[in-house]
Image 1 (cartoon, rainbow, N blue to C red):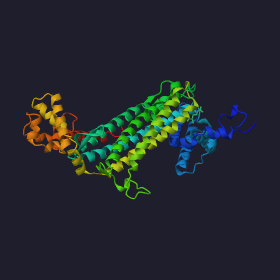
Image 2: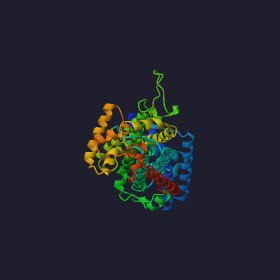
Image 3: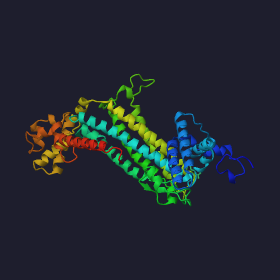
Image 4: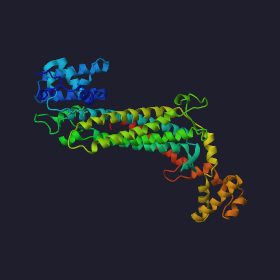
Length: 469
Ligand code: ARG
């Protein structure tokens, strides 16, 4: 009989074709799971010994061998080969080489199907916490900026047309709200990631007296999966994670879009620091917001990852199918991308400067206080629809005579509506306009300051409870 290097060699008479080896291998990318694979295997071996399935001595040499492999990989001296197909087989093979027969007992009572589910869950559990930390930093910088800009007024836009004056702090806190929801989605997803799959074996469970509760306790899983068939075929938690990441990316992308617009000569609301922009190879005057553009661009890739995974899953028959190996690249790419984007955006906004004068100037033009004037008339007893019409005519007059509302004389104003009095000019000032929007969640300084106070208190409490997701 030919020598067989594969674990399934017994049933096979011919060696795997080289093309198949290369085509089916995932080791080039799933090697990043090594730490979790080893952690899971040590817990599994301990359980096998505790249950009397293997000897305590064997479990000890398995653990020692695996720790040696871990350190080899960490030092970069472990030799990876695509013949080993994936990280699970590479580590098992190295273990057998290192400790002999005892190593060949590790795979007792488990399959790569539940093993890979375990590794990915352990990996994602750690990564979600890291991403939550990255979000926390970005949120903290946003609060810092909001505190500095609590008196800065800029035009708020709808349809990208000037609408009403708002505080820059209010604008910034809008993004903070989005990031809060992102964090809560991630924490919610974490609960469903945090379920032990090991013990499902290939698809039907094990005939050996394994103890899943013990493994769960060692690996700190508060829950154990309940159905072995579902366990090996379930990738919902990855889809959920990529969806949560997609929304985060969408929020970052929108923030970046604002910054890109704001850094144009036309807006000139913000100056992104030289260190976070790039120049043009041909046009000497250019300073381009490439970082913000790339975050916006990478958002598309994350959506692509989500669609790739959902499409991968939709036609799969029960239970494990090799298609599932294709879950990893979209997952890893999403984790890497979202972390990189959060980190660089945090630094970029920490180093940018708002142009307060330009914001104020633009808020003064464009009739941003037209609604205030209409509401002033309402308070004088004019029905809102009529007030809207009066102010509309006044705006037209201003456009024709190249004035703004506050520069019309009382006489001019009264010609359109006799209820207007001297006090009208108060409502036409930007400061008063902003100050008056004190409905809950509105842009008035008192509301915004209270929001900041609450968010800071919340951040204080969170850091006390840190890591207890
Ligand atoms: N590399 C595989 C994956 O990522 C591991 C599981 C392989 N299982 C199997 N029955 N071939 O899904």
